[in-house]
Amino acid sequence: RDGSPREPTPIPPRTADPYQAIVVLLLRGGFDSFNVLAPHSTCSLYRSFRNNRELLVLQPDEMLSITNDDPDQPCETFSVNSAIPIMKEMYDNGHGLFMANIGHLAKPVTKGNWFTETKTHLFSHTTMERECQLVDAFQEDGWSTGVLGRMLDVHQRNGLSVVANGISGKGPIVEGNPSLGRTVDVIPARGINTLSRVSLDTNNDGLSAIEPMMEYLNQDTSMNSGLFANFWAQNLIDTINRTEYLSALYTSTSLQYPHLFTGSVGEKLGVVSKMIIKNEERSVNRDVFFLDMGGYDGHGLSKEILQGNLPVLNRGLTAFYREMTYQNMLDKITFVVMSEFGRTITPNTSYGSDHAWGGNAFVFGGQVKGGQILGPYTK
Figure 1 (tube, rainbow, N blue to C red):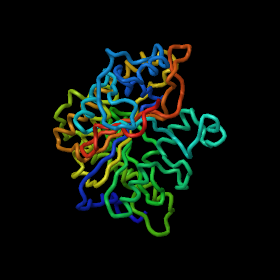
Figure 2: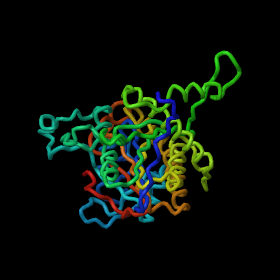
Figure 3: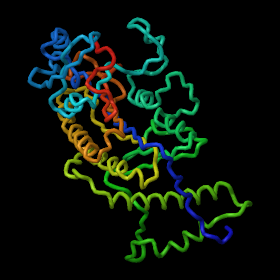
Figure 4: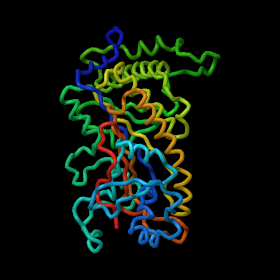
């Protein structure tokens, strides 16, 4: 220590480039997306779909119709599960689209050779959650970075101010090249935790009694000081400073529809909304956000599980869509709803469905060319 106080690393200024954000919501467990986007009962494919899905099939009274004009799709009219009407609303408004039958694929394979020609351990939650976040089938990157982390790497090298955010945790999707020194801001769903202290011998629960010692122990260092001790002290000061700064921003930011941000997804998207609204104060050009929702591994009673989860997902997406629209930020965001893999079309003996491969994802945002289904829907 050289006796001088250690200063927090300054927040880099953002450039004149307009703000943009990507939000990824991972539905953990293997989302049965073929009961979210399904052939409509008026489509000729529905008979085959119904015969194969059996008791899992989406019934006509559970359908909200959507249309597409792609002649390569097997149906002109598809259906969205009536338990998640916000997807139909965004689709019909031209802000949302479906990506059909997508999954991890390193090369074209057939039913006869996929087992020997696919190196990845398919159908495993852990493996496929990682693969869907890395998007690096050939491991070309070499650092096991995530697809959003690599995007930020490019922007950071081009001089933009970038931030990776994880809501109540993080995943490999937001990890970038470690040589750039960028960390991930992990923010709890119910707000930002600041450093506090509970004394063992007094009723004092503040930091004032130990702050002088913390400042003394983490003073600036000279050139002959230990490298790791210096890094640890600087990281501590930066973390405390950034946490207090973000906490002040978070508590001072009001949402137009706070009553809508309920449930596990809604709470997390409330945090995301506040961070997006305060992008200028945070001095950010590019944000990425990662959050998740569990409970989709429906080996038993999978339709009931899905129908129980979809209203929670619907409330969260509705709140975020309404808030971004009101804040005139919808054009600034792209939102991806995905899962690590799809589920089998046919049911098992437990009235559920098992791990499969491809599934359907949903993407929305103000600049998304919505009202379409990309990729051939499975036949």
